[in-house]
Image (cartoon, rainbow, N blue to C red; front, side, top):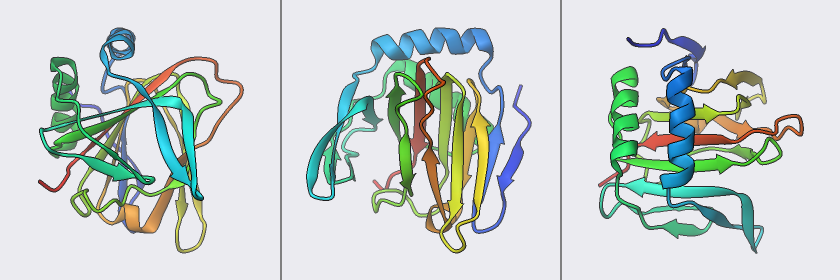
Length: 196
């Protein structure tokens, strides 16, 4: 059964939130499998001319030949695993979009987050859906308008999918604010459509 959508943003792009796409028992199983089976590595980025290794871990999975460059680093893909393909299929059913790549982030605690950014790299098909799947600890997620600084916040619950599409990456920043109160693990999968 499909989850009922909640529209978070409907101007200058769309952000549609689907709660409980994966149920609690499924999330517990997925969290264990993703933690163990994914080829996790610490992220390496270049910021302000400095080479930084992050606490959070990342992994890049995609169809063969689809590399991805952000923050000054190019990632070559791991090939799809049966686990990721099964998650991708369920997300595609929910959003009605198709994806050929996935960036995964592993946040050990709430102290690890992501600052304001836009997923507007040249490899991504312009205005295509980016579907963010949350497994594990619930985390606050924030949008900020490029034009006027207006902010919109929501909680991303375990098992939810946030579908960002249209010109949203042009008009809105997004971030995962850190929180010292959260002690539990969260895995985030962002499914994308890259130019072949």
